[in-house]
Image (cartoon, rainbow, N blue to C red):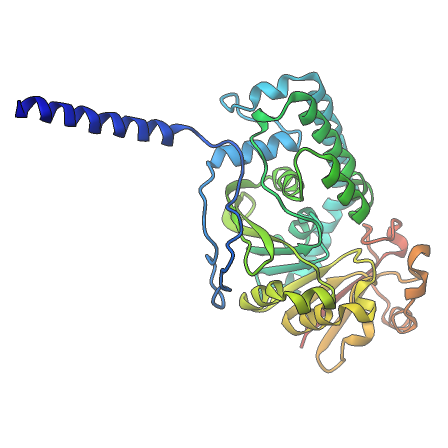
Amino acid sequence: MKRRNVIKSFALIAGMALAWIQAQGQVQRSIPFPPPASAQVLPAPRSRQPFPQRAVERSSATDIARYLAGMPVPPASPLNRLTADPRWIAYSNAMNAAFSRLEIRQLTSIRTWQAQFLAPATQFSRVCLYFFSGADFLYADTFYPDCTTYILASLEPVEPIPDLQSVPPVLLQNTLQTIEASLNTLVHYGYFQTRELREYSQRAQLKGVLPLLFVFLARSGKEILGVSNASFSGTRGVKVSFLDPTTGGQKVLYYFSADLSDAGLKSNSAVLRFSSSLGPTNSFLKASSYLLHGNGFDIARNHLLRVSVSILQDDSGIPIRYFAPGNWTLRFFGSYQRPIELFRNFYQPDLRQYYAQSLPKPLTFSFGYQLDWHITPLIVAMRK
């Protein structure tokens, strides 16, 4: 009798163990991240693992990024069958052509310029801080290839990516078309339009900036190692760990959905405190709608001037008058004529005078709102 009970107990335990193993073996192909905690504390200064982690299968995240970017996935990937759809093939061809043009027109020249002029100014920090970024990891990575931590912050929301195999084919194809359309301005002109990002988020089955971040990670050759929640203190965010084949090192990208206006930062300054905890930054401003020129963004502007060891920007970033000569060394590139018509009221006579006196080196790529590189201004500010 006792022997029979032992056998039954062993069978029960074995069955439970088998069920657990099978459950663990079901690969989660979506890229969810845990909901934000209601009362998470800020990380200690320089802490590199302040947020709860959630494992994401290595190949799964990278395969999703490559699929969304119009790039082939491994034959064994569950997404491989989706790439046989003629509509995906057409999408892939369009994305290949667009990024090929961008590489020729912009990125190759930027890398050459960066190695000669920007790299020496950014060697004292390996953190890139990019306010008003949208999903633009591509330019952050191109200008700051030596950074190991990227912090992007803007109003655009961030949401988990659903399991692509669970999305109805029609909705998935509509999402791909929406991704292609939303990238149009960045790929062709070098910057995102807030209105386009907002419309993308409303139309697409895949919401928020994470799908676009995935596209840029894939197109820049990165391998995604993990995706986890980076939300804290009421600020929603995501952390993407990835391998950079160019340097062979592991890096991390943070994106925070945050209101960077004075009113928004007075209500919640978590992004400022987090970026401060990582030490001096290389700050990046591009096509930022001249927001830092007005009185409604004093806190963000002062924060950048305080934490930055270098700042790379066009004329839409921090007005030149805020760079005290005793604290900053300025280098000017390209040419400054005037802002585009939409922002004509933000003309800076003092910046025009700097350009007239400094004989800046010309550029071979456009930056910010100016599409003609002959009249594109680019400013590098280095803390003394």
